[in-house]
Length: 114
Length: 110
Image (tube, rainbow over all chains, first blue to last red; front, side, top):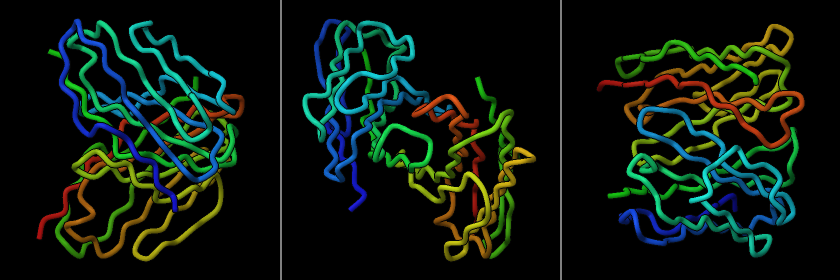
């Protein structure tokens, strides 16, 4: 099973709201990733976790707060977002953090900030 | 950082036609993946191919690492092949960081 699941599928939030995106995998992967994809653009890496520790933060604003509570779960906490943060948020996982491994992507959460 | 260029940006085909998509990259890579993104946004793995040639049904891919390019071949295209095709690479020292090309938008007409 090479499935990464994400919830919710769609999310609409106001600029003062606090919400969370959830990602789950049961493949035993120890590296997990958050990407952001704007319309008609490629995905861009936001964060990487390796063995539940934050390994890469691509200078993402602090209104995005990642969390990896265990090896199967990855959350992205959202607070005080701006309309320009509206995008498709994709989660991915791979066996380990390294260069010889496929990244598997979830279906994404489509976020709209009003 | 590593640069990834895909061509052509757009491709329109009739069902049954063959096509070749190209991905050029600016530095040595340890990881190269081809993805198909469907209209709902799901990124589907097609190939993990940092070097060599692979085939999967009507799709095949070749990466010539020494010349820094990869090709994705689609034969006998079907309307369900429509979508965006991305090439993504991980450079030599960028463990875990996939850099995506701008994509090729493929439209297959019946």
